[in-house]
Amino acid sequence: MLTIRKLVFEVIIGLVILAAVMLACAMFGSQDISFADVFDADTTDYQIFFKLRLPRVVLAGLVGAALAGCGVILQAILRNPLADPYILGVSSGAGLGVMLAVITGIGYNFLAGSAVTVCAFVGALGTVWLVWIIGYFTSGTQTTSLLLAGVVVNAFFSALIMFLTSIAQSHQVYSTIFWLMGNITEKPSPVLYSAGFLIIAGIVLLFIVSQRLNLLAFGRKQAQSLGVNITRVQFFAFAVSAFITAVAVSLSGLIGFVGLIVPHAVRLIVGPDHRRLLPLSAIAGAGFLVISDTISRTIVAPSQLPVGVITAIAGGPFFLILLARYSRKVSWYK
Amino acid sequence: MKQVIKAENLSFGYEPDQLLLENLEFAAEDGEFLAVAGPNGVGKSTLLHLLCGLLRPASGKVRVFGEDITSLSRRNIARKIAIVEQNLSAVFEYTVEQTVSMARTAWLGTLGFESEKDLQIIRDALEMTGTARFADRPLGSLSGGERQRVFIARAIAQDTPILFLDEPTSFLDLKHQLGIYELLKRIQRERGKTLITVTHDINLACRYSDKVLLLADPLSWYIGRTKDILTSELLEKVFAVKMFSAELENQRFFLPLKLPEDR
Image: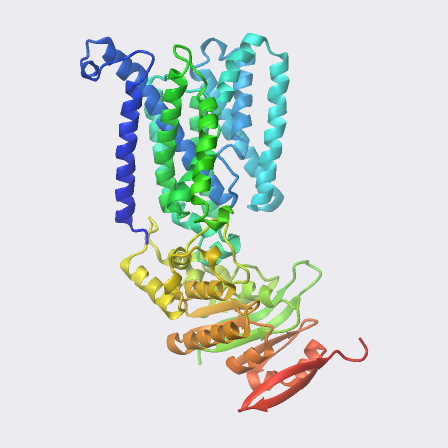
């Protein structure tokens, strides 16, 4: 049985490994730096390590943790293994926000800067609530109508994005395409601190309901008869995960695959208990995105690939290997 | 004897103009084994859901230990009533032990971890139902009889004075049918729980229950001691099937003979 001591132990081990991975990845790059010089404030190695690479690695870690954690939560509350953090409209909403920002020119001059971030955030969160309200008023918190509402709103907004793309000028389109593919760039440290606080606080809040999320797997009536106020838990989990997904998306664009495959990969290994699945998926997601981002900025150096390309190319085969390796133990995947 | 659960003037319909149950009145007393029987579609499972507050009645009240169930929180109800439903399956593959431990949800603290006492209760429930030896196996790898025992173990671990079961022996072979009912009888005797079981098996109900609620079509019902309700006259009337009834070793049993001529 899972005890709190065992879980704390696993999380600490996970965090130590994650810290080592982040440190190693920060040492890698188009410019070789020496470990000895990194801690000397007068060197350029110090500047590269602390001012450029470390913030970027930390950002990748935060975004990866947010996406994988929210993937776990959405798969649980929608009772659907195909759910990911984007399924209820975050992606198209954020995309539309960015597209509007770029086309109207408010964000064009500083694409990596705050106007686009704000528009993405507002678009993501606004769309998610729109989907929730449509789903809620059509049939309470029945997940099927929520999913359908998400799919339809996503399709509709994607059409709007395509429409805007077709009337926009090519240089405007080019800059948003990178964003739509998911792209991690250096961010100023206040942005990093606040995002870090929001994402970590969100995951801690989600952990509190994670035991009750286990019961949702057996259906609404079961969870209720075992003492879960399902409307409240579902709403809480949805609101918190929508919020931190919007934070992540506004910082890094639409990085696909992390929120879908990391929860599955971790579930294959540690099982479906959400008290364990949520923190370990968040740590694994952070590690996965840190490594993917390091590859994306080094493989074609000095130019860079959008990290979303790497997560999909590396994540797919990796997941299939896990599936083949572990699915014999877990009949649900058969 | 104390009434632990009581239906007062209970009416319900899935469509507002089409009632399924009307002005139903009955009570289960402390430590009693009540069987709910009746033809398909008379609202037996619906009744269980009404009694544990998962459905709201159109009119009337359900009282649990004297309290109106609508005034109780889900957590509070889950500490009083456990329910074993039909055909349970999960989206993700939980082990037997994980499934049973979910019973403790209504008793856990903020972080949702089981205390030593919770773990002891879970172990006891696994032992009592004979499921301890496959505690680490995933639920999907079990046979129908084993699965049913796991869900009964979960209901025991919920540690409630009242236990509902919705056709606990459908899809089970003869040996497992008897095994489940023997287990339920033990739970009634050893733990003093009040049991309400929906069943299609008149013979098992006749053998194990103290009281029977016979729901009949349309909107009528009979309640009383098992030997007074389960008679071939009443069963023929309610099920519209010609019945043969006899006694063997002091045990009454029924055989359906044929459908009435006018069908």
